[in-house]
Every structure is written in C-alpha cells, then in structure tokens.
Length: 440
Image 1 (cartoon, one colour):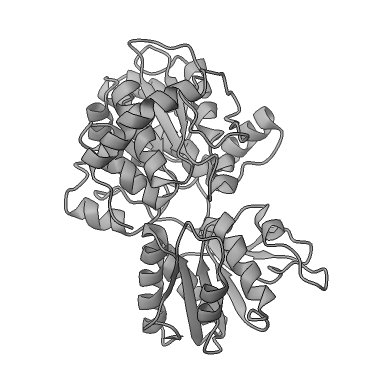
Image 2 (tube, rainbow, N blue to C red):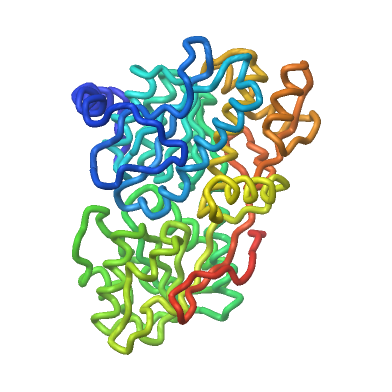
C-alpha cells in the first residue's frame, strides 16, 4: 500500500475534522464501548475530567471496519488504565485526559483521526493503531507533530526498516512484536507438522505483504517450497468477492495454505474456497488478524453442519508478562469477563505513555519519546503495578516496567520480542490455545 504523505493526510483531515467533531458529541465511555451503529469516526470521548495542565492522550483503534471484531476487544484497556492511573493521583500531579477515535480500519480515516488528535486535541501520545496500514498513515502525522505513537498491534516489519532509517525520530514504538518473529514462528510450526509445499494468500497491505515476505524466506530456509512464489495471491482490502483469488491460492495441490487475512474480508475468502471445494484436505494456516471468538461463525458452516474452519491452526502474539494475572483480575472485576486479543498489549502501550510522561516530568510528546525506552527497559526497579511505578518516578527513582503482555523491552527501533500462542478451531467452532512457540 502506498504511503500517505503528511501533507496529503493533513489535507484530507482538514476537510474531515468538521465532520469528525460534528458526528458525535462527547460521551463518557468507561468500558470503551463503541457506537457500532454508525460508521462515522467518533469524536472525542473523555473518560475523565479534562485538565488544561494534565497529560492528554488519545486512542486510535478500530471499532468498525475489517478489524472491528478484534479492535472492540482491545479498546477497553485504554480507559481502564487511565481510570487506574487517575485513581492513584494521575501523572505529574494532574488527571490524565483520554480522547478516543475510531480509525475504521481505514488509512484515510486513521490519518484524519490522527490529525485531529495531534492538531485539534493536542495530545502528547496516542495508543494506536492496530492495522499496520493505518499506523503507517498515522505515524507520518504523529512524527512531525511530535506526538508519541505506541501501537499495541501493528506488526509489519516495514516499521523496523523505517525506524532504522530514522524516519520516526523516536516518536514510534509498539508493544506487539513485528511479523518477522511471527512469520518465523509459524514457518517453524509448519515445518514441525511436516508441511513441505505451502501456498500463500495475503491481504494486500503492509501487514499482509510484510508477513508473506518474512514467511517465504524462513520456510524456504527450512527446506520447504512455496507453491505460488512466482505468482503470489494478494487480495484487495476493499474486495467483496474472492472466487478468483481462492482458485489461485489453492492451485498446485499444496499441503497447506497460509492465509494472512483480516476478519471481514477473510471470512469471505474462506467461504469462497469452501464453496468451490478447494479447501478439502488442505491445512489452513492463519494468523493474528483473524483470531477473534466470532471469526469461525463469520466463516460459517458447511453443508454437513460442521464449521468450515474446524481444524484450522494459527498463531497470535501471546501474553506472558509478570503483570498478566493482575491485569486479568482487574478486567474481570470491572467488566465481568476475560480480556480479548491484544488487550494486554493495549494496556501496556497506555501504561508506557503515562510512565514516560512522569519520568520526563512533562506532559509532552517530546518528553514521552525521551523516556519511554528508559521506563520500558531501563536499569531501575522492576515494577508490574503502574501506580507503584508512578510513585517511584515521582520520588526520582528509575523503573523497569514489566507489562501484562510481556517485559516490553522496547529497543532502539521501537520493537519488542514476544511469545506466540498456537490456536486452533474445535468442532464446536470455539477457538482454543493448544500451545506456545517462541521464534528461534
């Protein structure tokens, strides 16, 4: 997907801001629940009392669009962290204010939303986005506006490459590991299961193409063959029919098909493959972009009444951080259920913004960018509790935050290394984790 320049996105956003502000009034959303009855990007949703002197942060996550099923599992983490921090005194002596924006899983909406957050709301940091293509558009706006962008789920290797070139000037980080690691983990898993010939189909954006490249390189090094390497199948994110793509992906009698998809369009692709009789006897390999409890139902059942996805296996960034048990308990106490995919990574992204601002003793993007790696991977006291970390920082101590998703040791490129859950779809259509894999 072509990069959207800052100038272009600012022009788009300037036209859109009036709509963004006028579409919805400010409402309190303590549970981070989206108004899914509308496709409009919600305007500012504050969960706390606004403070002119306090830290202001934003979230730019998908509550509508192709990744809504996962985005809606993530978004509740941000206000939960903000409420927790405010209950123990806030940051730099003032409450934290949160502004929430739905990026619609769309780079243009994400660019408009990021411009609004940076120029109208004047936030210091943003949690977002999830889709790599949206984060790519957003970071090109965040960087010149000196807003710290921390993604809990954009996993494209492209961000590492750009960070190495200095494109982001330190205003980018993520709490989910890049797909170079997930592709390595999935290629090793496929090799362990004895698959020798694999075909690929990916969504044609930063996420899909980046994953495809890393997987192909690793699987070939392990001695495997990519059946359609010379004719890769990359589908349009806006497509509504997938018969041609399905036929191409399953051609050549592969042992398995690696499908790097988003949930809405991915369900249509897999239905098309089933309806053409292509998927019979072929192992389906999936990734994090579709792991949500509703996805097997989206794909549906076959004529025999069984779920089409039964037996599919996939990987997803897992969570094994020292703060995970406490996070899970807090989530259940507040919401009455278990947190969903990427909720721990979203919690950690928000936590790092607040801790870095306190470490810098200033509520600015420049301050956060200067301290975020220090609080994430510094030589100080290990802390799993955000309030404990804030207290130590107020007292002039150094900390090393240990998150819910992992140790979140952010490196010079804004990357972390993580563990991956291996999941499958059972006969009952429910997704269950059956193991873990660490890329080697």
